[in-house]
Length: 527
Ligand code: FE
Ligand code: CA
Image 1 (cartoon, rainbow, N blue to C red):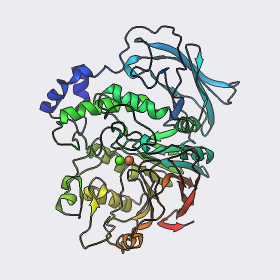
Image 2 (spheres, rainbow, N blue to C red):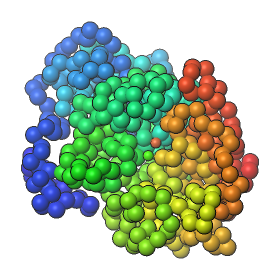
Image 3 (cartoon, rainbow, N blue to C red):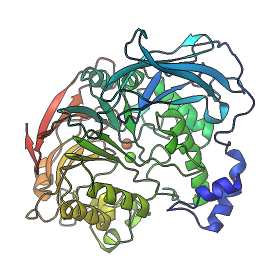
Image 4 (spheres, protein in one colour):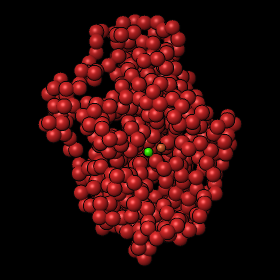
């Protein structure tokens, strides 16, 4: 086991030997991944074991990951499951009556991975919709719907996807997912803050988290399961595949690699917590086996494509980042913010991204990531600017390198998708956003939160001053919702959908503002 972890810890952004040993000393509480305790036995369940429904994700042109998790008691540690592996089976079909089954098999769900099931359904037709379901112990799961992507050399005419983030359980109902499902996207990007780690009652009173701030593997498991019992969230997962990535709250607010936001937490302690959090994340999400965590490391950044129409780069700006400069405050772009050693991506992810951006065949190159890339001065009074050090301004040199790379290699139609800050923004990105005379090289659409922050507001105080100080910004508001994107070879349309009520059922989701970018010119105009 030591060898296994030791090699896992050699990853870029990995640990010194001293740190590894102090981390390893804490290890006995980490269960062994992939180890199955005994052979599978037939079981019957006291309640529906498919209490969290089904999900699918990370599709390519001929395969997709199908997910479920067995838990008759999802809100209890252990999920109400026995302490031995359990067998079941799965099917994927062309029709929802399962008359034309095109793939099937058995699975063994084990306690080591929280009885989660990740099936790679392969050999599928490209650009095709499918239905799937699971069975175990005489019970049947709900039926999910998923799809494959077009072949890499195909020239699809259109693509529709949703962009969502930040779904604080205590601060609102996930009603907006009802409209998202009606919008019928091909897939969903979730950009992080899928859960929040805080103790019950810390965030709001629409609903209540279970337990104290989460730290152990059981804590994280119960928190994810609580969120996934939400029927609107379940229905959206069952409606189409998702590409998910995390931000900070999947582990701890504003953590950076192995550095906690709080003082007095050692890197070894944070890595132990991170290992728990990453394992629970893997267990809950429809991710490929390549994302199976190894201790506190997990490969989450990855690529996808929709024929030649769009290439997706799903990024991880938490696991490898250097510590936020200026004590993670809001500061001017001072020496600490401009330090060329600051990195959100880490060297390996940056190399990977730069390489594939340079050679991308995609008409649109979509960076699905977490924190705002535009250099936005958040102050509306006084002479001193204030940029968020947790976002790309705190890593301004790497940001500049990325935008220069996009410019110099003529990367086709780069669009940055962002979550994190519980507000809507549409930004034109330049190598230096403080110089509006420079050409725009990319476009950024920041989605607001689904619920975090509670009912928002359409009116932003001093918006005119904010926009005068930040010519890169073309739209900003603070309502709740998501973005629905329609992409064709000629245009990228971002429709900012907002919901009028999230603290009570019955909220209505409508279009607040719609923007278009034309291929070849990364400028934002009203649709
Ligand atoms: Fe958030
Ligand atoms: Ca965040």
